[in-house]
Image (cartoon, rainbow, N blue to C red; front, side, top):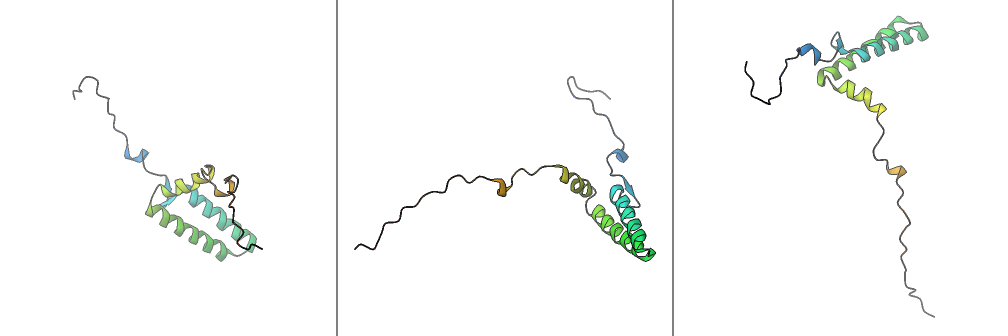
Length: 107
């Protein structure tokens, strides 16, 4: 392969480096979160069906979100760390303009 003078060098990358990490098709952090929620439900309610129900609901939601867009769980999990750029509650509107109304009742 010959390259033109001054052209940047192109190096191939493996496709596996660009794919999100998944466990059974679900994003790995969501999968581990659903396992923890299912274990907590099993432990607190002392009912295996409650743990399995919550795990399956969380796994199904995580699987659907990962199938919809593989990068969406990462964006949602990282968005909590970012501050808002605009908050109307913190905006200072400044002094209110005064409006002079003429008195229409003359004695």
